[in-house]
Length: 608
Image (cartoon, rainbow, N blue to C red; front, side):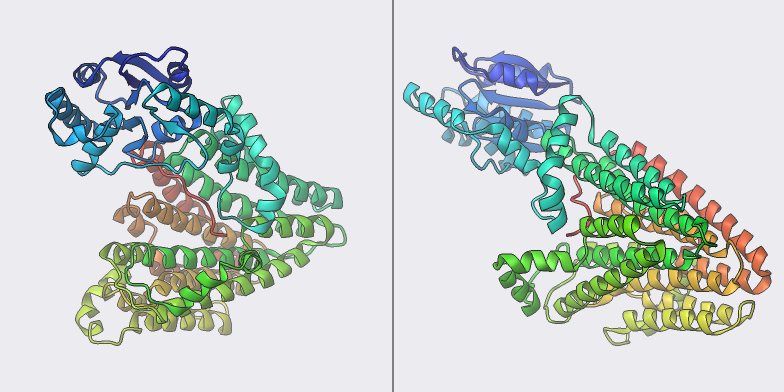
């Protein structure tokens, strides 16, 4: 329960108390700052507390934006201020100062009229950041006289509050398909859910279950099954949009919700890939083995996301960006048609899922995967090339936080850490591009040797040993270079591709599905790492990274298994390894996110 203290003399006919109760506040009244301080002292320390001027005139949604958003320790609009428990000491100090100076005509806080506004200034003076939401046409005022009050009430009546609330529930920056084909009606689905008390996490779960049902339909291998799969996949995407819109509509933000939304997106897409591969094998006419294409699509999509994550983390708080490429991009953003064209080129989640759904319903799994691979490859080339150009043409200082995030994204295990410690002094004297070149050299060697040597030979083991060495040297110094954000994606591409190639070289039924399972488990671990960093909680514990081997340890183990075991035994080993990795990372991930005390966040999802 939250508490709102309404200060000052009651205003006849004001809906303020009803609005506050509708927002979930227990309402108390106080005549002045001293009374407000007394009432605040009676509120348990673990509760949110708000102070609202009794003369407030405005929309209920303006109060909702100011007083109920869980992401901010303190927030305010004109005539209303709120704090979460962590900011209560600053509020208590501001109240004490205001009460002490009341009636004397002195004191810094008395320069502001409304008590709530004075308290907001007092919080700022004490180093507490106060969030002020963008209200747009919404009204939030404390009129000074009856005429001003009447004008404010007329301004409230002139604005369709619900229309604004619905419009603001839609993500400001999204893909063309989502903006024009989904959001016009999914926001009404979100409102329907809100009015029935459903939470964003429940809608996210419904989206996952719908996508899994779609994957099951695809796995039947029949044309009706493929058509049903395409329809259900689009329905799942509608729910996927609605969960974020519901969060914005009702301000139900949480770290757990952001993690569930992002993780379930990947689970839905990759489960559908598996369903298509199963359906291709079960199709009439002898079936078609497309597991390599399914795994290739998953590898490509995962690596695209790591490029996004690594680049964004590297530049999260960089300063002095003078990149002409970034300036050109900003100029192009001023031309409406180029904005939509560029968003479609990168094949965001809406366009991608629409493509998969339509191709699944109308063509074959093989065609679906081939078109998807070509489209994702072109999108990856476009986005990566642009980010490389931005990086090499900018002059910016990378922060320590960014360097740490890139190191955590690398997922380095004990073996590479040992090489990094041994070669740290030598690596410091190498050129700026050394980390990227070392990672790339080791990855290319590993993939090439795995692809062009026979299954069961020891050459992939040799290449994996070299990969361990180059991986360690690549992270031996802080990743502060202009292109060092490429190191984590190179590691992901090398590990996932090598597993795919070794499984394909085994040429036995079940090897590629087992590899699909292993890469899925490892990819989950890597996405989990990303969202822990995004949520401000840091990377997974070191014991977890070392338990699952680090990227270099896992690939060394897989090459050893390929050399020592027969193809059928290798398939069993991959399956066991996939189950073991999944069990460890899922158990730790679920434990962490369920018990996490991280600040509430709202992630906007995959970049458009």
